[in-house]
Image (cartoon, rainbow, N blue to C red; front, side, top):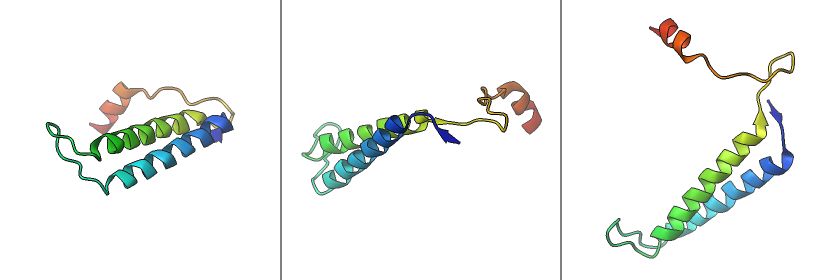
Amino acid sequence: MNIKSQKDFFSGLMFMGVGVAFAWGATGYTLGDGARMGPGYFPLALGVLLAFLGSIITFKALVVETADGDKVGKIAWKPLFFIIL
């Protein structure tokens, strides 16, 4: 596995770190429920969203290649399904 873009990889890690910190900090407040949101509901949702987007950016920056250096293509789901059956 190689890193295609180091800037994207490390910025994704930074987003995940900040998102997890926001989510962890928001647990000190009352969350409430969907109808009556507490003061910690919105920061928790934003922290989780930021961590999720950071993980997407981080994994997009990684490239999986074969031994020849070719990128691995999409998985052939139909043959895989029949093999598992």
